Amino acid sequence: MYSTAVDPAMQPRTNPKPILTLVDPSPPSLKRRACRLLRRWQVWAVIILFAAGWVIYLVLSQRDNDFVDTGATYELYNNRIDFSLPINATHCGPSQGTRCPDRKCCSAGGLCGLGDYFCSKPRCQDRYGICDNARTSDIPVTTNRSECGIQFGTRCPDSLCCNSNGFCVNEMRGCATFFGCQSKFGKCDNSEAFSRGGYLAGADWPMLNTPPPPKPSWTALVNLSLVAPYGVKPDIRRFSCAAGWPLSNAFVNKPCTNADGCSCWWSCEKQTVAGTVRNCLRDGNEGTDISSCSPQYNNTIGLTFDDGPSEYTAQLLDFLKSKNLTATFFVIGSHVVQYPRILQRAYAEGHTIASHTWSHFPASNMTTEMLIADLLWTELAITKALNIRPRLFRPPFGDIDDRVRTVLTQLDYRAVLWNLSPRDATYDYTDTEADSAQVLVNLEQALDAGKMFPNFILLEHDRANETVQLASPINDILTRRGFQLANAMGPGCTDLTDSQIYGTARSGLL
Ligand SMILES: [Zn+2]
Image (cartoon, rainbow, N blue to C red; front, side, top):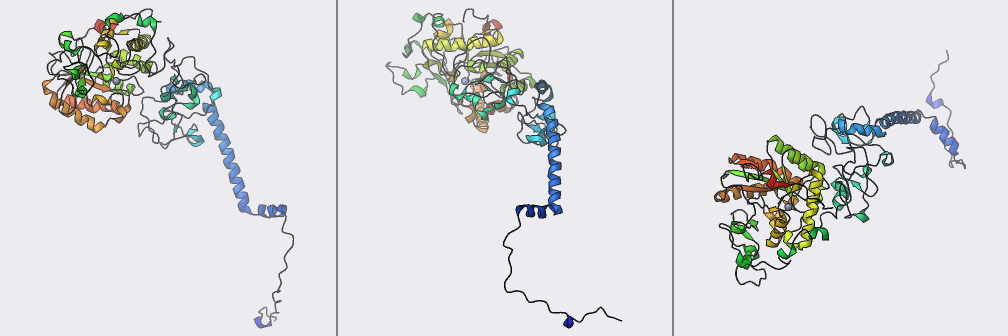
């Protein structure tokens, strides 16, 4: 038998390695390399997977386009998103009870996001956020400057921004994207920032948040011969501070030509331990200012909110409604034209609306002519929104003097101040700087210190989220202490009648 086993020693010798390796002088052509690559199955697998992904993407994105990229879809936004839910930038859905920011969808897993994964119809939870994939050019231009954005499916005319509340605006606050300009629905032309707005219909409103220029036809409504000249301090010898309201130390060092009482040329102040309530109050024989509830309501807190309306006022209205409370809102004219619907809601829900200037400038620092224009532009905004004329006015920072009072009286206004503030009045209009915890401490201390001055009118603010969020804990403190809460300008506090609060619209302003 022939054996297949081979003795290794008998194997033929292999050729020794050549000393020189022959190198192919021409490397494989690109074509040959590609051919070699294509012979590998892994490459084919990658190509097939990629193609499958692309097909799936096309299918999904097509469905997505069907879903939002038509004008008609926008009509559904209002019905689908639950705008009453609070916004959370990342988490959303029924378990969180929050919705996504505008234009983001809430995925089935409860995360906010953009892109086809989030925006595809099977995953997007409509109630908690809706993607917006439409092109700006496909969105119709609104015919109403108080209705734009994702809420209405319309965009603003050129150079106006659509703010987060659905108003076409053109001023710095509205144009800054971090304050919620819905850029797809209108972009600001910042070269025109601070120029005229026009979101509340009915007038060509002056520049926002700035004292308007004098308007001669309005100046003529006031008998200037009865008004003290601007810049001249009143003769304080006619005037002494009311009992319990000593001279203000804050003005001791002001230059003054009068020999006595210079520090009280416009201000008396009521001292509390925790914080000074500093009002330029004029009461007693000469006074008409309101600063507290009537004496019989000696366990009452009269509620007032200043500086709105704002994008946060709606939350406050919800809160007040839940507590069955009403309050007086001293509103800024520049804000009324930006948020007229919120003002209308406040009025419809039984709150009192009063004036707090157009520009929030200190009234005693405006010339008489500017002050008249400032008051009447605010009045016009309130009248256009509510068809009533306000008769109550609160001076920003509590800054008022007899010159301002004379103008107010001639224009049928009465000044309203306050005698309790959870923060010092220096926070007026800088609410975002308020230290929330400290505000509550200050309030408790002011209440302790102010026991001898009951029937409070309380000053709160609704311009900033920070102070709106304080309404609830402040309410808790007051009710825990057993106070009755009432609308400051209504029954149970000042008992003002409707005709003392509002007049019929002034004719011929425009
Ligand atoms: Zn204010």
